[in-house]
Length: 469
Image (cartoon, rainbow, N blue to C red; front, side):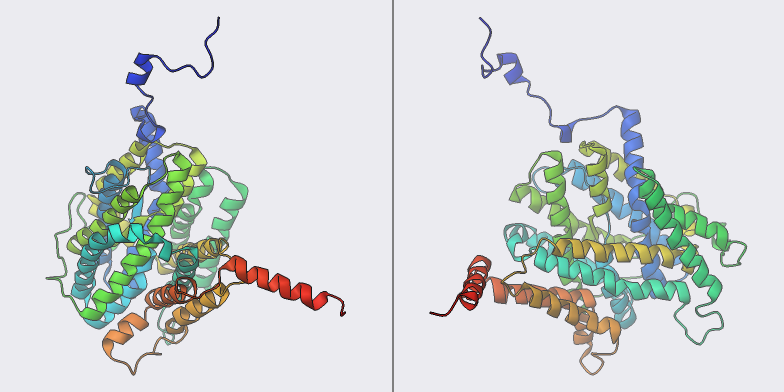
């Protein structure tokens, strides 16, 4: 007689359960190739942040190269922390790759202009400590940061950075002789076209490299145009590590700290969405404890970046997409990617090469990356219920308040400095507006539920069309 389909497993099978694909250790050669693929997918987005910030803060090429190496170091260590974890304290233990978030760029530029670089990294350290303290409460209160809030904020993040990309392409001095030179605009336009064509006519892994190919080809074209200057590369070391607190002892202006703490909350919102997505893809749904450990790692990135002159990290969405595309669920692939990033961070000459890329080339790639961030925000808002709710008004006000300092940079010039730092940041002001309005309309007593409002609308419509008696 055959065994019933639901018969219990043998004792040996019970004693040795199958390892979950997330915990599977792949052969070394495959691990290396897949880890390198993750690095190639996220590298451009990761180094674009220090490039954009360095250019806007008017730092020299050598300093920008230092920031790039520090950025890669922090990204590599946080990726290792997220994928491998430390006990029950830190790390989500999923195949996620961390990298510098665009969310912090605008506030960092404002803080650098008002208080200096020491305040930039002092406020980042404070935000990292704040992140560690609120990781657990945030994981429990994630319902207060739904797609309505996160989508509005992410949309503003992308829109607010378009001007930075335009400044890199055309220049920031409208009186300069070469401002918005047709050759510069043509070069940037050609790079954008190349990125579009790569994505249109290629598929799979190659389509993920459109931005990287645009940077390489754009730089090669810029050489005969006289737009490149790699003279500082010769003086850079092949191996080295940036010293902690390169810009001096950190400062902690209250306005800068508040602004960067808000950025940390926005970063938490980004990372939460991406970690939940990876949990679903890999078949390992996250508990609140898992989520809290992942968010705490973001907090550690703030502390470590503040010390090592790096940037706040978040889970990179493009690598989340790569997990979905390749179906490779092993977290050790992400760990290998983290190790590669650390090795790259120890090669200062590489940072100098990337820092020497021409402005129009970086601006063109940044334009696509920033617009992609905007598209992600719009895609997130598609999950929001607008019918019969006040959510459309919430999005409208959040976008309007957030874009004010973008279209009118001196809008808050008559206010104290701390107000200018907080209100002058599109991301900070949009986050505060979206969060408070969401609480007001969707989490206060006496509000109507969406289904109740929709029912009232339907009843009113039926009454209006009913024949008179």
